[in-house]
Image (cartoon, rainbow, N blue to C red; front, side, top):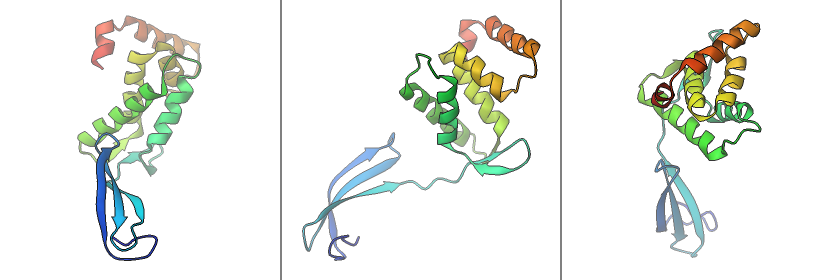
Length: 158
């Protein structure tokens, strides 16, 4: 690897440690010529995960977009950012583990709703009202009834 300071083509690794849930490695390097120290990151190159939208268009899965939706649903609720980040991590892991390079946006939305139902019921209803585009109050009430009819064990297993 070239030194960013003197462009010498020889460096040695001083320190190496895993980061990002063991998905990346952070390396501290030192130039063998000038002694300059710098950091590099090594990451596994993953296949892109494509989300097929309702209108048929396709876009790459975005952790940030899912996290923004969760943050919006959990606004003024006692849910930490760490919990929401873990939800996004778990959803992406589940989608990748399924082995499909393309997933429907409905599948992503259902996974988000299932996780929210176990974390915060108010956030779940907020997310569901936007995601399912409730047309009137009766659809909203039906969704609340479904939520109330779920037993606590059902919620934990999802």
